[in-house]
Image 1: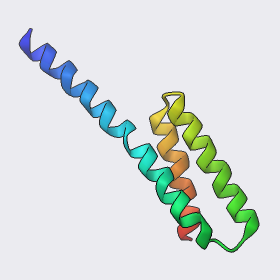
Image 2: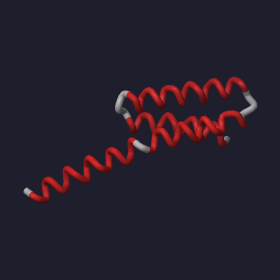
Image 3: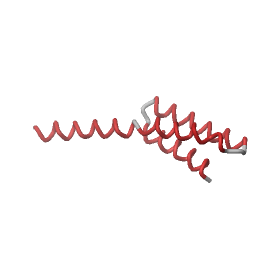
Image 4: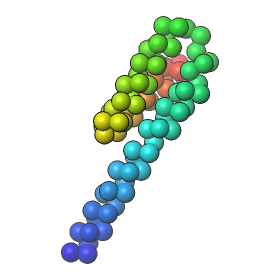
Length: 77
């Protein structure tokens, strides 16, 4: 029984840790988007950032990270 509680505890803690990386990712986007000179690309990055933030708010952290990382890859390309 003790092992079950410990397993559940670690499962809950790991989900909280992953959820915390989303704000860090969109913060990176916010600070880097001004370095992009192509306006069409900026719009695409902003759309991905907003969709990622919405996914995070809706509880879809893996979807949020995917969208936010895609936006960061566009910035870095």
